Image (tube, rainbow over all chains, first blue to last red; front, side):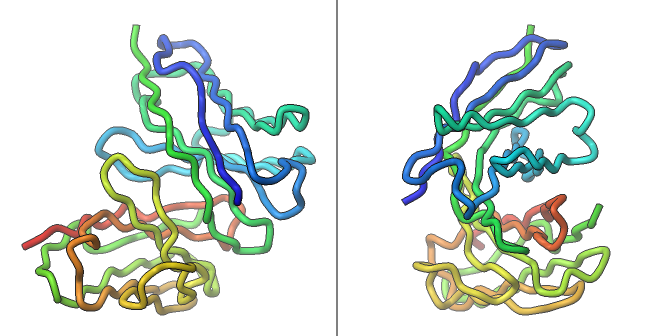
Length: 121
Length: 107
């Protein structure tokens, strides 16, 4: 059964780069069955999709974040990562990794538990 | 981007009630609309996918309908564990978008 676990620093300074990792277990990150994605949720607010990628490198980013987001895959570690540059307090949120199915229109049926990131000096 | 309009933003109901949440999209998304339930401090959980398909393990009191631009999530015979926040999400575009959420509270 596919499982995801987020990890990374809980505190990031303004203007720096937020870096998170999602470790995949129960299947290979090179599986043809999934995309790999990130979603965030600021305190007391709704869900915001950040981006998705396929292990081969195809990426899709939220247009509002695209200039600051980079996603990548490390097949040797069965992990994928998120980098968000030039962070501000508005980037404070719980960050979730998720696995949308690769079939057209597939939902996100597997989620990590989430990791809280605070942007503060 | 495909814009999502979810209503109401909050809803009070009693155990045993039937409630309906609506999600409208800014363009035709066929049936590629999913519903998630989120409880405080937890990750969202998929309830319904592609408008009307119940995810494995989800009680049959949850149902979804719609196509095109208008969709509904109905919960019949509300149970105490159903009080949570619900989100719609479109997967028609590779640029996913979520609705604003509906917080379902106990009356």
